[in-house]
Length: 110
Image (cartoon, rainbow, N blue to C red):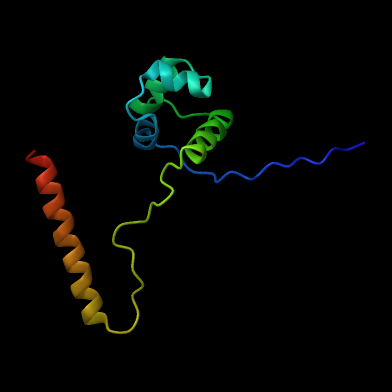
């Protein structure tokens, strides 16, 4: 007899070194590794870009991210629909670019 599985599909994402480090946050490598069942050296290699999580760890990282609502409200900065008035859209893109450069400059001079 087959049993029904009530599993919610998890959103698959590509776990880059930067995203893994952001998900780890202020936790130590050991603390973070313990959450997902990975040795701290493995987590370090992921964050250093020396290796990538296999499918089991991708699922565990995605589950943790979902539980912690990681990037839940994330939107691509500068996303917009370009239709209609292209001159206005060009001006909006220029403004977004300018504010991005100013934000980057502020972060670099801190």
